[in-house]
Image (cartoon, one colour):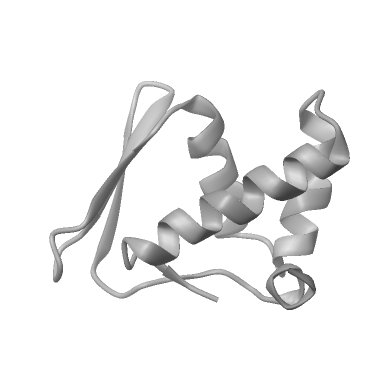
Length: 91
């Protein structure tokens, strides 16, 4: 997990992000893989894709949400895993 948190998230080419209210949808136009995000997932995506590293995103999210640090760390790692599995990001 240490390597993951020092990495930077990069959106895979041909991935489209569309907000729908406070939720959103991600779609990889090449693979057809998609993922619907709730409001928290949308915020995580927004921060992850603009932060200089996963650790920087984690630090920002920790300031925004009332969550225990280990829980956020686990949730963020799981979210990144889902995004990778659907070929929406690289790290």
